[in-house]
Amino acid sequence: MNFQPGILAAVPDHARYLEFDFARPVNRSSVLEKLNGLDAGGNLMIGLGQCLLEQLESAVPHLRSFPNFDHGGCLVPATQSDLWVCIRGDGIGGNVHRAMEVAWGLGKEARLIRQLDGFKYDIGRDLTGYEDGTENPVGREAMETAFVGDAGPGLDGSSYVAVQQWVHDFDVFRSMTREEQDHAIGRDRETNEEFDAPDFAHVKRTAQESFDPEAFLLRRSLPWSNASGSGLMFVGFGRNFDAFEAQMNRMTGRDDGIVDGLFRFSRPVTGGYYWCPPLNRAGRFDFSRLHPD
Image (cartoon, rainbow, N blue to C red; front, side):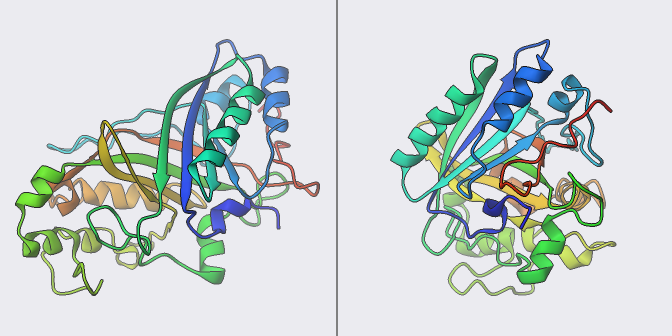
């Protein structure tokens, strides 16, 4: 197994999401030493942004910074950072201490710019009550969806992750009738069954098999809530970003002018793309691709 195990593992009870930027100019040898010192255990996932790889005079195929998806009244902000870290755990306390260890390990060259705690709700529901990730691929399909293969050492087993923090407007959501809510999502909240929903329904806009080529993602999203609001931390893994971009372009109405019903009560406030390196034989993060391009 040469991929980060947390990617394929079940959604945890709790997660802490961290984003860091490194001081410019980047000290290449120092940053690589710090990254090599991170514990690659199953409760830690990391992803490197394009801006950091450029500073490290390195490149990997398909990696780019988060693009502009804005269309009409749909705003999809890009808040690209250098390093994304996801700490998985059974409780908040352990995640807090692990986050401290990561920050100490990265040193003063790394500045924490965003932090958010996520949690599992019920059987895996969004805070609106709808089940999340119903159409996730499983087994071999999940492996083929999430990980790079046949690309050579240092790339095989790597993955690409799109990360967005969505904020729900629960005043708007609560003002909608139950039928309007179900139509916005495209599923019955109680049974999780799809029905003949309007074309703007979220499950119709993002039906993975409806794209050409098919646009499958491995979703590992979690709800979040704090004093600033509540919503969903979207985390989607793929062997590149094509599937995510196809879905996002359709959601904003770029394809046919139909805006996803999700935008009726929710909006993204962050957006980043990251390359998740594989593991080497010693079980450490494999940064062998990070040589000068």
